[in-house]
Length: 297
Image (cartoon, rainbow, N blue to C red; front, top):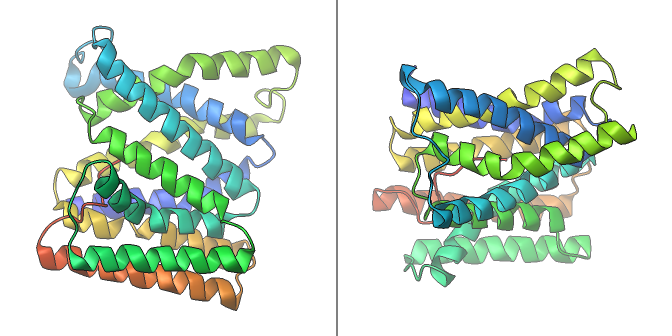
């Protein structure tokens, strides 16, 4: 399987995530997040220990400064994951797709503001168009599209933190999950003791889906890691739009979420911005600054 198809598979799975989370929409979003963290950690711990047939270097001896970096990343991706699952099960799949469409452009702004990166004219044009699209949607909605803004901001900030993260992708993700696993497990245990936990109380299928959320979470991450080692990052940058496109189509065509002419105009402006952004990056022969190789929600 070529790196290109690894990338298509990774972003395709991320795009189809709403189908999975809809199957457990009877479970509160915070509980789903807790199970994702716990079962992902179990799977990642096993992979980290036995990768390549030999135990990996211990995470117990990582410096406190490095742990701090991954703790910040863990909080950001935790917020992003919770908001995503909540939005999907509350009927805002279309707005989640908007969040991930504009996330690369949020990365551009963070690069300029925080890292003092210099942008080409095409990238400035793309950022301005995206801002105009979001402003138009804000006026149409009568308020800021908070779900999209929250997803884009948390994911963009996560990418910024990960640029400074020193560990390899597998050990880094394991450490991130380890930061969250104790509070997640404590929260789920308290719910079980109190009788409010969904696990073991909502049927075998529900239990299996909650346990499977760990594998569902890490599988595209492993495919993604395989892709970025084999293909140029400029190609990865273009493939990343597969996920929000699938989410958008699911929201409109399968779940029949409202999508008015006014919304179409706002989305169209954002899509034009992404076309300008991608073409500019390809013409420059590399990955646009706003497209970073980080993990999806």
